[in-house]
Image (spheres, rainbow, N blue to C red):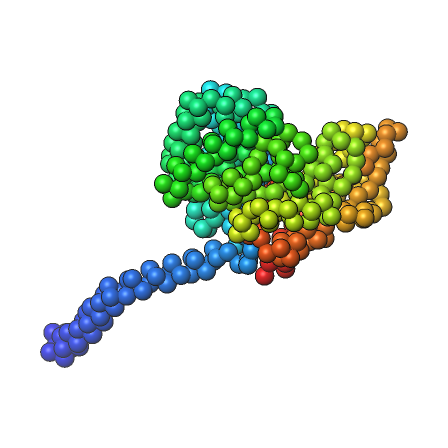
Length: 364
């Protein structure tokens, strides 16, 4: 058969068939590239879709960032806004960066998963330096310029100045002026501004911190406002409920009359306290489980629907109050009852993993 016309004919036919097939495959791929790309995009969007009916903002602490990031990755479809606590205000209007702040992997993860990233600038409830900035027009403007540069550098979705424990009425207008001016600059750049406010049931509240926060002004200039409905009892008080349910509802009842519901987030604690006398240390849920295992204590539920237990160590009585999936559920129910935007979680990292099941059940 060597050199026969039949062999050449067969080679020609097979080559033509293969060539024609490759040609049509090329045309199909070329014409359908956009469809393929769109399909991939749609799949990606579906994978990263926020699945809840209410919003969930979650604060990420710099000092427990690795654990918090793991929680973020596990629950990415149930978090709409990430609030990394990465910065602190300085008295010269500059912005101090915490250790491991501006983590590129976290920023990229949030953006890829369509989670808004709004970092927090804090004063750690130590008002001195923030008050110097707020009360001086030039420093205030310089601080705003520094915030704008920061937001634009990393293309954040916005910023949250969280200046707590200000010394009362004299700082109400300076804080309001600062937030108003910053809001204008953020909105000009299509960025968001948020803040967290102390719990109160009247305009002036019961101490200096809430007195300095004008909720009516903040409602006008902010896109998100979290009620810090926790720490009713806290690290320097006697032991007791961290977020008494009746108190939380009282705060919320007042808030919805002042703040637009679509901007309002109810603060939900994911933590606990271990009191000895009138001093307490913070606990994550893992700490609580370890103490329960060690001391075999009986868990009780308070009249305000919080879990607590006691143990003795070196003769000293310790009292633990904490939150898990059951106790946060009672508070999340209030979000649906009052039809506000959602919840603000303090904080990500080492929480009861079943908390997220409760959130999903309540907001589906």
